[in-house]
Length: 202
Image (tube, rainbow, N blue to C red; front, top):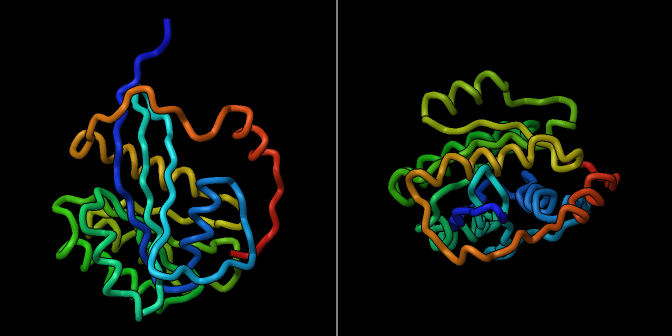
């Protein structure tokens, strides 16, 4: 007998200062790939991936937004209606952490009511961290945020961030969609991806 799944769909937005590694995080999550040279995002791009969590198939519709200041106003089009957000900063750049705090406040004030926010410190593979982890964790706790540290280069913490965010959404925000939708990655492709060794720095 085939297993019965409840299928849910969520819009997720990824925000943060330019060059903190937002696109690298998404490519690592989506394809388990890393590319050192990535052109800056213009406006926004989107990805779709389906993950299995218990009895749920969760379709994540993920919007990757540009970090440049001139595109800031456009980001509102993407985080409005989003049920979850990953706000990314670079652990070696304190200014990006301060900018992340601004994004958190903006989402709380202008985004969807009760949207779940994850604060993500990226590039933990690099030396000379300037953002204190305990300070970031304290800020996240005080503001009811999920908190993760990641490395798009190494693949560390990426899946955990997305899956944990997804798991925090269904009880409040789930919308039933086509129950026959299939996962984008077969088990064979996932196994192959796990065996790949990708170089890079971010």
